[in-house]
Length: 271
Image 1 (cartoon, rainbow, N blue to C red):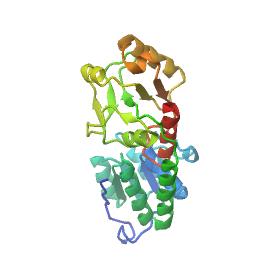
Image 2 (cartoon, one colour):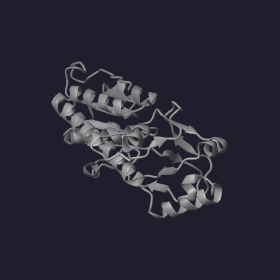
Image 3 (spheres, rainbow, N blue to C red):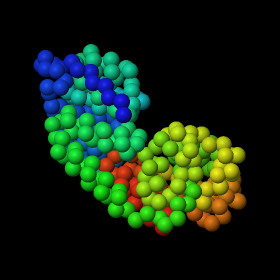
């Protein structure tokens, strides 16, 4: 995880000396982590994609790639947190003396690092350790599938057809959660988080289970997905055996405190 703090504060104190009171967050997984740490009252605005129920009434300030600078500064934050980097936002924060925390969280270990960084920043290190310990225990307690079937994890494709596939490699938290659930990523030998998959590589891999991640979509997404795969690849083992699962939970792609629940969903489907 990368960490960057722009440390100019309005009252002259250094970033390390001040505990943030008004926080704007551009990153739905980080919003969830802050609430899980008991810091929800410090969050004064969130990005447009936040789905944590307790944050539903918060003002929205755009997304990670299209932040609304006016909406952000209107909240008078003393800290802005973003997943990834956005140079223009960094310049705006620096010009106004607002601290900026830039995170890059896409693995379980990076999430634990994020939790501890936030615990130190907000002076709640024990809450951070408790959250890490609890989530580790929840993950370890999930009943694993007895046979590690080769699985394909799809996070993107062309509408209506099984083409233009974007799938999960070894670098993503989803690969880790699948392993915790007792499955095996058919492309765990690819070190990237996510990558474009060719038709030839898909046929060679012959996955026995296909998981499609389509957060927030209607139940009809399952019917469309199965039809698309049946038309394009009827001979794949997963298609032949009707082992295509569509995951539409709104948090299903968030590397945050609900990761054990994602692993639990995968395990149940693998069972």
